[in-house]
Length: 373
Image 1: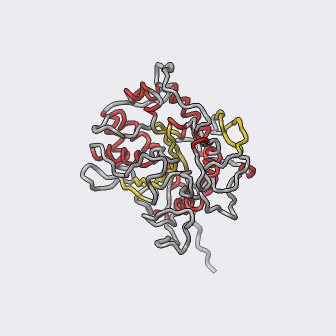
Image 2 (image 1 turned 45 degrees about the vertical axis):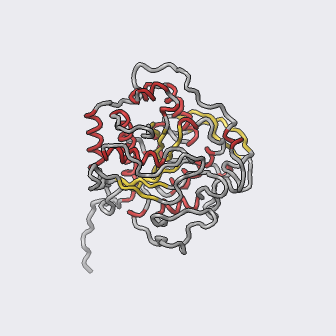
Image 3 (image 1 turned 135 degrees about the horizontal axis):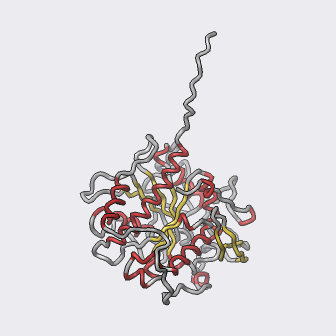
């Protein structure tokens, strides 16, 4: 378990972040374009502190109404699949066996939140369009179903296929007995043309105010008048961990301002006491050896380098980031892919449990003697 001081996040007020007193209800990038300080490269020390090289970017992160983003996404070199030297040993110790898969499935299936008030951990997946959020949900369900399924519908366009809040309980092969995990899907960040999520709505979801099935609309932010609005959410209604999702094949081509957006999000989410991790998807698209054999993921220098770049983009230590390969065109399950997916779920649940530990009242065990008057 990582040390608690790694969850101390910071964001300068000069970085263009959203203010607490006036939370924006516009999609990210819908504000007037201002020079934004962005993280384009950097290193991360043992405490998770990011040392960055900054650059001025005058473009809004996400599109203003009607704006074309194609020019923004083309301003960097694309990730190459060229051969890179591979490591002789794994830089993370993982056992790629059927026994390990079975062990991880038992761990996840038997998971129960450490707080008696809650029976399931609600995990919110947040990421840009086409980052693989919905595919991850379907892939995890596939592992427990024993066959490849597409439970969370996945799109292939440049705009988000998911438009509403959807919560998926992960069930066993018979479709019964959901485990202690609920994966929550929302629309992608930065779709442009007034279709992206707002900071206000994201925080409303995390706080537990947004009803299941609510369809997001930037010009109709979540309010107390919203149909189904949860005025007094209990602990079970809230989000207990946030998993950011990044597409490994796009890490170098994401808009420069995305780093500022992520760090704005992380600051506000951290203020709510919610821990965050990250998933790096589509790793098979950047490393041909991993595409052939997923068990090579932790021997790939290219994937290791991409994870460091993802960490700099998010302002987060790579110890919180796990690579995954989602099922897409496959018809049959693969043990190595399953182990990687289950390891990611186990990673997420560890940080969700930190939230429950923080939320559970601490009793000192001291007893006061009755004072007679």
